[in-house]
Length: 111
Ligand SMILES: [Zn+2]
Image 1 (cartoon, rainbow, N blue to C red):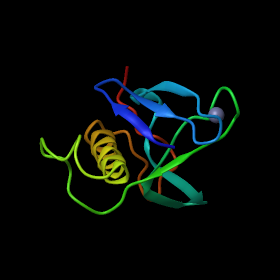
Image 2 (image 1 turned 90 degrees about the vertical axis):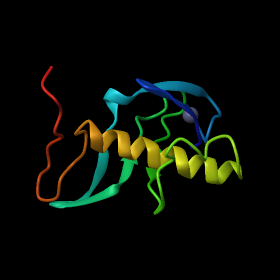
Image 3 (image 1 turned 135 degrees about the horizontal axis):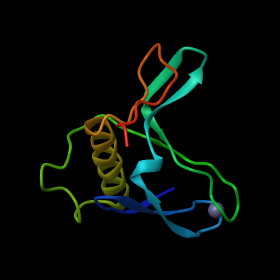
């Protein structure tokens, strides 16, 4: 589950099941998961399935502030992870990669 590192174009993730580390392009991610028809949980980010063990993981944005240039590299590892998820979620919202209530399509910027 843990995000090891969040970069501009991708993130490094370690699989909680098999321990494999991989980089996931941000372009493959979107904020919001459809939990039922016409029902979207906007705080959840679904990660692609692990190529090695097929585990699928979900990141849940917890309430709190975005980093604002601090907060990384200090505190508990779990705090740092929550911070990374918040930053990732904010990034996806900023680039319009999120599901909206009442819509089932992903709003991608046109190529
Ligand atoms: Zn795995």
